[in-house]
Length: 441
Image (tube, rainbow, N blue to C red; front, side):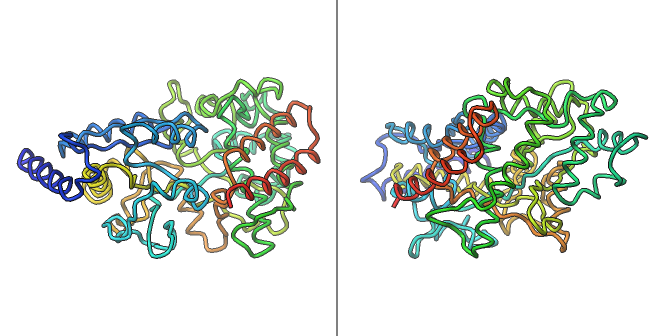
């Protein structure tokens, strides 16, 4: 039966290639080339590709861009004679760059399955990017260490547990007292390393920077701005200072630290907290010598000192928009759609989505029980299900460019080293935003 299914697909694909003969590869078997966005699930995507090929007979190649280097890798790969057939854009700004490569997906089954069609990237009547994973990030903490802290007879705070941390002032008091007691807690620092190795600063220049931009958009009731004031820059500084002043790694050494180093420190119980997203669970669970129990891995919102933040939840959204390369041979576009339909609407594909890739897929083909079982996804839904909390939207897809983020990351690093004032960082960030926004018009 499997051979017959493969033969029927190949025949169908070849007929499609004939129909679109002007752009089809000659004498070539239809294939899929996926350019992966997330370095932390490289091995999982390669396993998915092998299974897809085994089940359908369609060759599939996966290339994973280096952390922080997706745009550069996409520019390089898409210029080749055999470019990616499936790739990722990060939102409306990414679409402006790659619009001519994005096939219209409005008539695909994948789009018909999208639960909230307002999430897709639209232009005119077309649909050019479809979100395929809802994710969340915040401060991941080890509840076993936190329970140990709150049991200390000499703790300086007058609260009973993590559940009482609902604003920055309380978070700061707890973190700084934990630093004083780090020997008693058996940790090297409260926070994991603030990574600034090349390409490893995205947690600070993208995810953390989302907080002040989110609050500025909220205050101005907008979803994007050509120019920002960085009104909440002091709040941004609050949390960044808390990280670097209570870290396991001295600030002069953070230039050599990676995200992987940070996740390893957390998994090995060397620190109590690390800022990252639910995708980080695979790194925690996969770390050799991991001592953190799944039931002790939990999330706290990233508090920064904004008025009313007691009702703030986690940062939840998506920057994962899948696109099919409109310039790929038609048969390869067909094969790419076949991959997406297999992945998000067959038992084998969905099993991979849930158990290997760890995606919370926003499609009607997934029932409410078809979610990853990892503790961070459970935490995401614990926060989403709390009607008293408001999620922080992902506004960083509106950031003007990768260059803007690179400049902000470099400024944060120089600030951490003591070579730049926060006022100068703020002024440069405001200027860089306006310059880069103007450049993409």
